[in-house]
Image (cartoon, rainbow, N blue to C red; front, side, top):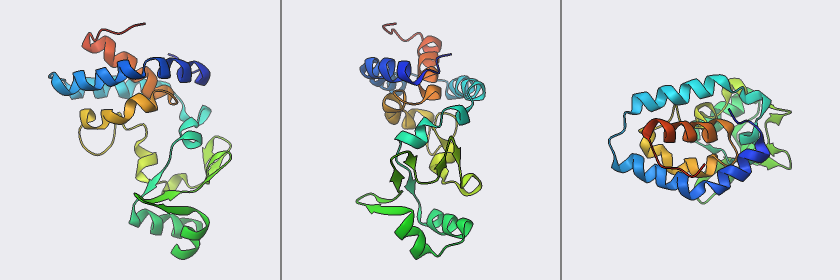
Length: 168
């Protein structure tokens, strides 16, 4: 199991095109999603995200309207104060602000709003949980495999399980 973030960044980038081909392969071939989800669950169980928290340093967190309210209530501020201090509006909607360390709520390797964290954080890296089918969520995985140990190792395990030809 590879967890070194430098190696994951290097190998994930090197395998980006291969991982895009895997995504196409999964979309065009019958894939037993339950089997793949079990593989992803096993890898997710073996990796402690709090030793890494790289997703919190790298990824952008989109917020749903109800999450703005929930997070504001959780930290004890009004929605207006929350959007002013902790979120920003983009063309695609609201996202959590970032500092030079990553997510505004990242403290060390832990989330200071864990109990009220957005759904996108709760489901990350979206291999076991998320909206839609696993195959429909695969379009984001080539990028995530460059910074997330779970995503990187899961895609490698998927290749083995599917007999996908890869360049190791």
